[in-house]
Image (cartoon, rainbow, N blue to C red; front, side, top):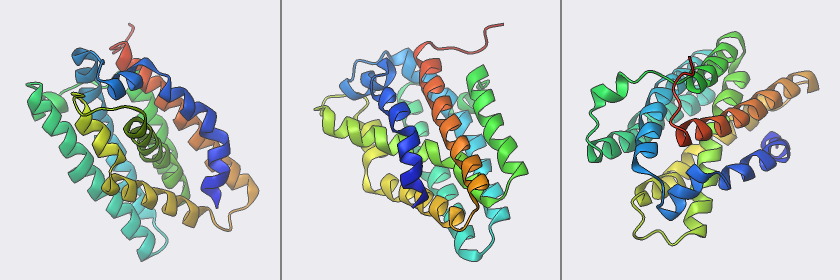
Length: 220
């Protein structure tokens, strides 16, 4: 399967996530509240753009089953993952209006623009490659944190539970299924393009963790 090939390219990058201070802070509960609030706001506006990817994918889907996979991912993001953000935000006194009014950071803007640019120019397989890293790597991180840390008293327990639970794992499995389905039969030159997208979005994910750790917006 194509995702097995992809894993050999991204395993090293994703392993570095687990050593990132922001991710480790989520796991052991030591993460500063203000850094988490920064992630909440930035990731919420990210997810708005991320959802556009799935809508683009549904429009470009070559058949009904593929369209269903894209729309299932869209529904899970809008009404599952974004619900978690809204729930956490209430706990931190952040309104949904405040979430939506957040200005995307430079890294956030570059990341989402990269994905949307490729998605608009490419076919459904390109869209699947653009959205794969986020779902797959968050499930990878959540599962690791669940196994690695005793987090019963962790203030971020709900975060760890969300990204490691059966529902999000099923969502990620759909993203992987979609990628494998659309990559099947592609010539090597197209597979290399898809692979490059997944590698670059994996690097953007690290930059996103860094941006949240440092509470970055725009340097200028």
